[in-house]
Image: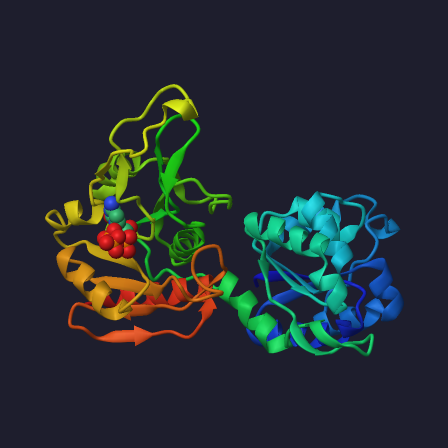
Length: 395
Ligand code: CTP
């Protein structure tokens, strides 16, 4: 039976962890609870031992483990580390590599997906330090279930209330449910921006964090595909199982995509490839007095367009970043580039796309059929896209 390790920190909302345990048990997962020392002062570990059927762990120096290293052994068996509720303190420890109790030691010893559901007072949650820690962990691939706005234990009303247990369980399952629906297929994903250099210091680029492409790569891996991830410069960590090719310029991106195209059954072009590069690139930094008033640019190759003639039985998915008339503009791109599916979004919408963890997209098919999604996490959007890709694969 697959195992989930549930870290429980000292927050009044920790009683909700009981429902979380039940939620995973209903889906046939075994849950191992680790309580922080302070959490064990708020509630007896016995309650969690009884609910989970596994002795709840609190102290790594417990006499009982004298001949084993429990955090290391457990880490090897765990499919997901979920921390709910997570305090600002524990988030800070994870972000800075402090490992001074069972849970933080377990985190540094584990290699599985990590999901954190924060719960704290609004001021603590919105504090710059907490937000910086969250961003740091997100960049390392740690996921968060955002807290809700509501009545808090400190009697304030604000952000910081632990998300609903069902929502936390749903997010957890999303991360660990593996399938074989793309087994035997190779999926090539491009992600991130490209950089077109004027000189060693200055470059032309597009806005793109790479998050959408990385989510797609990770989801394709969860579905059993071999994944080739060709990525421009990003600040996020790629899924370790993907075959990663790092590129900087549009020309390098084109070269890698062309080199791996033959192996791919599905190509998903989420990268924001620059449409222009400088006509000349100087190998030395250009002194500002010598900089021309006008600098010539030349078009780069449209990689998707170039591939369309060699498409054969491959499934090709493009993205369209638009600012107006989104569906029509995307439809034109799809026809021009002979795509099987185009995923369009309005990049002027606040809170989605670019650096955000959320997106709201329209999926457009060659017959004009269009599916508009709600605003969802990029993980959920990647699942919607790959569900449609699987429909196309299945004919
Ligand atoms: N694309 C590409 N090669 C380029 C530029 C874009 O393969 N040189 C791909 C992108 O990866 C994306 C799709 O084409 O999947 C659409 O990119 P987008 O920037 O939205 O549109 P463009 O075709 O570049 O058109 P425009 O910039 O005029 O909107």
